[in-house]
Image 1 (cartoon, rainbow, N blue to C red):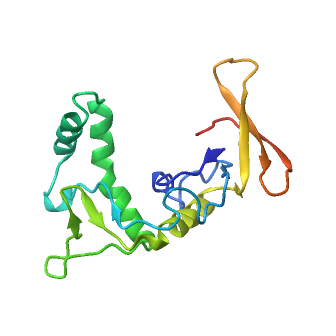
Image 2 (cartoon, helix red, strand yellow):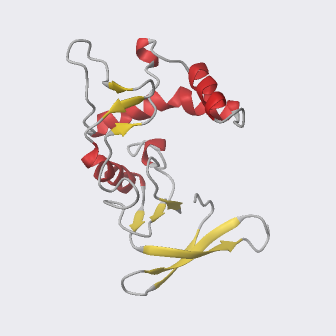
Length: 179
């Protein structure tokens, strides 16, 4: 079972990831147009541009450290920064229109980290990738409680919830849960 959230789909390759797994996506609205980015985005807020040597992961770690007054897990920030470009490229492969400078072919920037996109199609693109990766997608299910494993008390073993339109009750059992 996995929750749908903005940006989750790039973590998977819907063509190959999870082929031998049963993946269930449970969303409280509809993955096609839910959440804070449902009306679209005008920018992706972090793109390193390592291909063109614009920024490196160390640059983003330094930025985060300064911005957050030192309260940052630098190892996690570094890991995120080193993978973000590949995620953006995957979005472009899936059909997200990214604005480019006609002279250089580089992504058009707004500031040091942001790149400009035509993001009205962002959520449908993410939804399509989620549908390809998941065995089942349940829309409009409000998860109310996580189910704990009876043998391992700190391990989540599933969830329960209701369809927000029909009131139908759902029980999801899982070997792994991502919230």
